[in-house]
Image 1 (cartoon, helix red, strand yellow):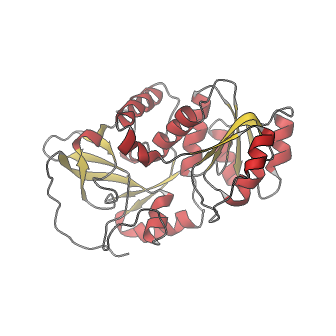
Image 2 (spheres, rainbow, N blue to C red):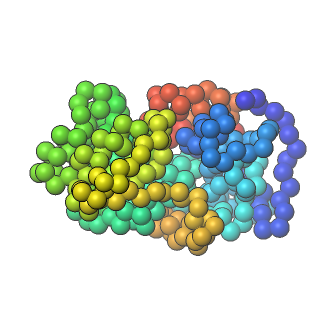
Image 3 (cartoon, one colour):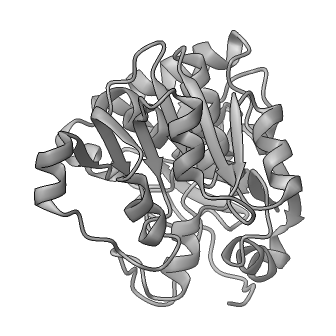
Length: 303
């Protein structure tokens, strides 16, 4: 990756030009830069799929994704006009930039895919990361009881501060017996899993009757396989969560979810955790920090 001078983009029909005020990092940025993501942009490309920007000409502060995919790690970016959502007034640029992808994903995953209800036991893996911190806040806002997993004292403390009812340090203990004990043998009604691999496999051992495992991603690097006979015997579901696919099948959902997230921000239920703020020219270092899992919350670039 290199920081280059390129022509300022020109908006087409249905697009707006925004001056980027903050761009948040996400794990797909790492995979895309490595050529390992399911969507491979033509090279060269500008990374970044989530930003807070100021619409050139109107000054309106908006959040969302750049038009056509990546492009947020820049001083200026194009956005689809109907996909540039008003930034909540109570959030800084860095926090507003962090509200879009992981919070939209978390809301859709918990509500549309897992049908979370008040009182549900929700097991959230990698609870201190960008995906996990959003999911903890959203699950608690829905009235659920949260068990989070994280690695190390610093990260477990973050989960507790965000409102998790129980936190498991996976570097020192196995979460399966803890979940069974904490829930009184009931198990997790919902498992929110961005990790995959062994974490998914072990989650099937502590899933509740009629529980739902939401497959969010595979940061472990291994894509697990769901055993159909086990699904049948234990009577649970494994549901996929490809948030971006709603752009094709139900684009109105993005605006509806944004309104709900804005309400949750205004009511104090949602407050994105920004773990680190770095200048734009340190984008490669920022992605490396995200890749080696040394971060908590969101890492945000500021031009």
